[in-house]
Length: 427
View (tube, one colour):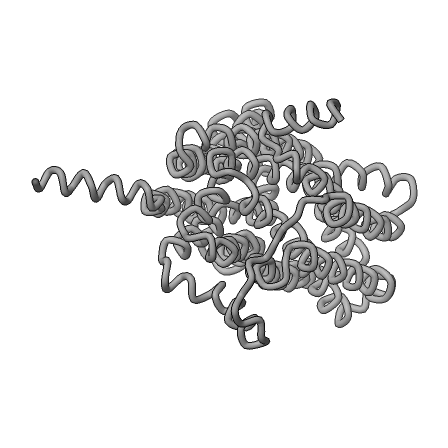
């Protein structure tokens, strides 16, 4: 008993709510399964005869369902609870993935690939983002930034690091299709840890009206909250901007870097290093946000930091003749600044009352889903007209805009303090 208490105290000290630790483990394993194919599926499809445009369309359809599921996740948690919502997400993933790998992919049946891969896209947002809502409800506000930082550490560590490393070994050992089948196993294991081994209780507030119309009203609250609390809508826009470049860069930056002697293999190694940096700084900026303020961290480290290093990723190959070391350092700093937006997940639900936290997180999660769609769309719409330089300037401008918008995200306590100061000056 004392050992368990000591373990709980240690977890709480480093910022992981000890009552939710198995949920964090579940997210890590689930996202490892979900992220197995992200780094290589498009290349594999093109090698099998699918065109680049068809692969991009497949990814776009996937991004649309991710955005929809991300929006539903927060309000579904308030309507039916996190465990049921996470289970629904796991079912969507397993069914969609099995149909995609079992029927659509072997025969390259493109008409079937689109809907099955899209169904799969409903999975991880409903699973992972529902747990994030759970974290925001059960963590004290003064520790919320750090707890959210640990969530993104697990999320990104599974999706962009462990999934890629396991996949690189498994493909060599078993091949592409068997590797894809293992994803369902990892997803089931992650679901088991997060839903069953995790014993934390999440009690839904009793509602006077528990009818179907009441449930529908709860879901619509995920939209109407923007009208009641415009700051939540602003936070959603900032969240879209956060990772837009992450999904835009792979479509055009490797082509640009190739002109300066940076091969695809080197670029992929740099990309992997960037996200090792990113998961580390997910934790660091969670702590920094709790110390320096969530709004300040997102503004300066997130918005201004990403704007600076996005521009330098474009200029460095020209200034330093494709020097790999310099490019890697700038990439690592860019990845770190992407994590500067982590406190947004603590700031947004704190802008509203307890009854609206789920709806507020739905808007934030919608932003997290939409960036998967917006990033590639920017490249598709503007690249032929403005080229690499133009896309870079668009992204830099968006990051500066996000920094400006973040200044409007004042907590109710901050707004009250300012109002009191004004009253005192008038008196």
